[in-house]
Structures are given as C-alpha cells and as structure tokens.
Length: 357
Image (cartoon, rainbow, N blue to C red; front, side, top):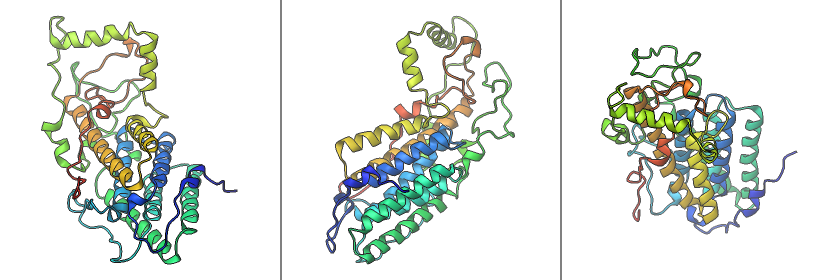
C-alpha cells in the first residue's frame, strides 16, 4: 500500500489561470529526487566517485532545463554546453506547472541513469513520481497538468539522450577496464594485489565546460619523485607517513566521517547533500534551487573529470599499506585526491546565465 509522503504536505495551492514562474513554487520535487539520487549512489553497484559525479551533473542539468522557461531571468544552456544543440520547447503562450514538469523529467532521468538499481529503489522512484503527480494534479486543470507532465517526460528523455553521446555513458559497468597497463617504476602508482585501476580513461569523457579540464586547470605537478631524505618529495611523503602513525582519536573520527568510500554517497554526493540541507533550511523556491543545483552539479562533474585526468597524468605513487592507513586505499593514483574537488570546485556560473545573474 502506498504511503503518503510527508513532504507532499508542503505543496502549494495553484491558482488556475494565473501565470506562474518557477519562483512561485516550492522546491519539494528536486529535494526529493536528489535525496533519492544519494540513496541510489549508495546502493547501486558501480557508482564510484567519478560515476556518481557524472550522474549528479546530468540530474542537475535535467532539473534546470525542465524549469528554465519558468525562470524569467535565465536562459537554456542549449548552445552553451558541448553538443547540446537543441531541446524540446514548451508550447508558446500555454500555461505550465513547473513542479509537474520537473517531477516527470527528473523521474525519467533517474530511472535511466541508475538502470541497475534495485527493485526496491525502482518502486521508491515510481512512488515518488506518482505521489507528486497525484497531489499536483488535484490542484490543476486537466490541460495544464497533462501538458506539463508530457513536457517533463520529453525533457527527461532529451537529457538522457544527451548523456548517451559521450564515453561516460553506463560508466557503472566499466569502472575497472582490464585493458589498462600501469606504468612501471617505483615512482609510479600501481594497483595493490587484487586491485585494478579505477576509471583510468575517465578523462576521455566530455566536460560540461571544456576549459574546466584543460591542462591549465589541473592541479600543479608534485615535486619530483625522490627517495633522498633531503628532497622536497621525501619531506612531504615523510610528513604524511609520520602523521598517519600518530593520529588522535579526533583525527580518526574526522577521516572516517569524510571517507565516503564504498557503500556511501561518495564525495560528490556529500557536497550535494550539504547543498540540499542548506536549500531546505533557507526555504529556497523551485527556481532558486534549480539554479543552485545545476551550478553545483555541473561543477562537481567537471571537477571530478579534472581530478581523474590529473591522477593518471601524474601517476603519483602512494603510501604503502604497511603504513597502516585507517582507510582502505583506493584503486587510483593519489594525486589529485578524490576529495579535493569538493573543496576546490570549478564553477560554471558564467554558463548558467540570465538577465540579472
């Protein structure tokens, strides 16, 4: 039996015939679908940090494009993002409910991006879409509801089709390609016994903002590898090693909290979770939230693309397991670390633009 979801009680009353913008509607829809996204990342096989960042990027783009025609001071990203040459348009002069549009668009794209989710999560997703549609339809004329729902599905399909045109598509199925051959030498990273390199070809993916992943946007190279105790490299490595052997309980607790390893919503999910919490606390509306989510989502996706590109450019050797790290060593080079994009993201704000932005 379907349970009534608590967040539905906050939905607004829609005045039929009144032209509404997305600023007039609450953000219950995107908050719910990003909550589901974080759950799906935790529970769906293959959603490693880079794969999760990509899914969050396309989900945020879907949200923004589903409501952008209800944002008087913003414009679609068609023509600004690579290969995004067209999207379905709303009927000119017709009324839309932007929550209905976003609901059906986001449900479609989540269903498609997480195509290997569990049956239980599929049921949760379909229930969320249905419950929103029922609650919203009761407040709308039939023609506004049907038009909005149909347009949302078109946007969801179009954004998912766009996501299929680059090599990150279905990345959850190809995290550890057997074709990758690690570099040989003590100065280079190599997988531990039983490990395979994680997404070594991720840099072949399409960036949302290409200049975010050019060589000039990458972190600077590390000091030259050296085992000489007087070298800069040795001093840095020794500092990390010494610290790792003398951790306080508080440091261990902090490291564990921010680990975001397997079975969590990963580092990019952590950023989206914090944004979602802030938007709810500040009670931002649908329009404001869509802009915030897309700026976060696109920048996270590009930041993780740049991060993974730098990993396999520098191929920096990491500490040995004999150093007794408290966290499991990941199957990828250590520079740049996959938490770094959370604190030093690129920001594609110039591409999410409008008359007053």
